[in-house]
Length: 278
Image 1 (tube, rainbow, N blue to C red):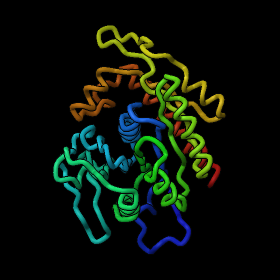
Image 2 (image 1 turned 45 degrees about the vertical axis):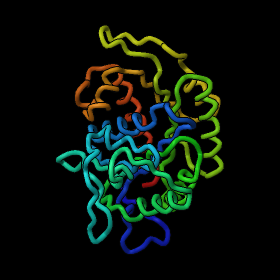
Image 3 (image 1 turned 45 degrees about the horizontal axis):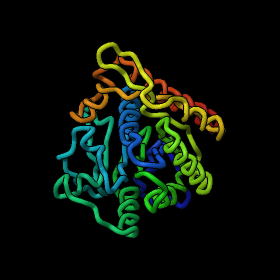
Image 4 (image 1 turned 120 degrees about the vertical axis):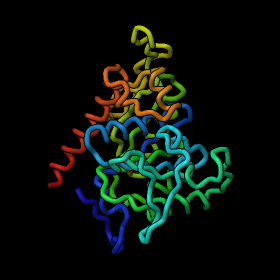
């Protein structure tokens, strides 16, 4: 699918992107960047060309998760070339983390400067032909979210994937995120309940450390799809810390199955949407 935008310029760096997904969370600490990374890896594992745009400007963690923290962004005639994370160039990433002098530098910017960089990321990065572009956003409903939604509106993004944990405080924040999506006209692809149980590293049994089922109940109340649950898994945490590909390293784990099922639902939904449009 080749995306077409109204009044599109002669050279449009998003023109060859098939699907655009935004990953949102109402609060920090729910594992939004983890979910973004694992969805992207699972899509690539399914043979899709994937790009990640990390617009969490104050906390760009995805370069570390994908073991490309020390990579540099280069420029060509058409704009910035994203950093490819594999030899086959099936997956690429753009993040402010590549533009900082050191990983410990703080981004102390006001809203207009953040908005300008986000617009530049969306217009000046040479994404090439992608099946999916996944946009990892910061927590909340701030300037960054409004800027991303406004800049992408003409490309008609597929919608938002909302990430929550089972606790009531997180679910309450996701309700506000649902309101944001409704007010901005952004479709909701579905809700993911992260940290839903703890997978024992010895016996692989999953125990509910927190509560469970809150994300599914919210999806049912809000009449939006529930995509699935992802447990707390020490193997996943270790893989992210070390910049290893969890999807390839642990294909027999319960967490792999959970992520694969979520991605399967996303792929199925997109196939149905493409069939209706053709």
